[in-house]
Length: 215
Image (cartoon, rainbow, N blue to C red; front, side, top):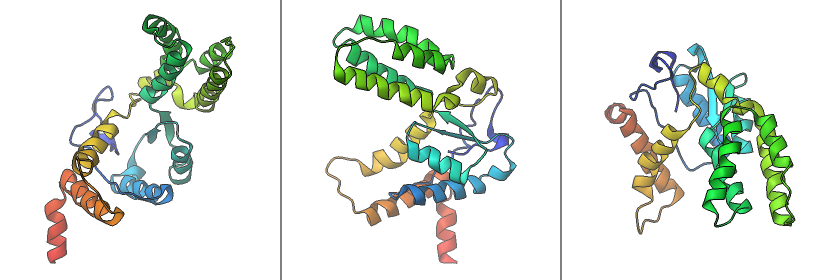
C-alpha cells in the first residue's frame, strides 16, 4: 500500500480510498521492482515523508534499502508483539496467567520503543532448557537488529502508521478470498493472471484496462 501526502488525514487517519493493489507470485527481486514502480506511480517522489513498513524478514529491508533508500523503516508492531507472545508461551507453557503477566512487562517496553531495555530484560532470563535459551537468543537478536525500526512513540508523534493491518486485509481480500478456496489448484501463470485482473478491479482500473486493450 502506498499513501500519497494528500491522502493522509489528521492524526495519521488513512483515506480508505487511497489504497492501491499490486501483486503476483514472483521472486523477491521481481517484487521489489513491482513495489518501486507502484510507489512512483502513486507519487513517491512528491511525498513529504517516505516510509517502508513490514515485518522483520531480512529480504524486506534489503529491498527497502535498494529501492527506497532514505525512507523511514518501521517494523509492524503486531508482528513484533507476536514474537514476544511466542516466547511467553514457551517460557510458561499452559500457564495463561503467567504468560499475560510476563507480557504486560515486556510488551510495555516494546510499545514504548525501549528496545535496549527489552533486549537486556530478555538476556537476564535464566533457564536450564537449551531450546529456550536458544529461543531467547534468537528473539534478543531480532529486537536488537530492528531497534531503530521499533521507535513506536516517535513514529506516532509523526502520525505514521505502525501496523500493517491494511496490507494483511488486502492480501486476504484480493488473494485469499479468490485463490485459496476449497479444492482450488493453480499454476503460477494462471494465478498471476487472475491476480492481475483482481488488482485492476480493486484499484478501479478494470474498465480502463479493457478500453486500452480494445484500442
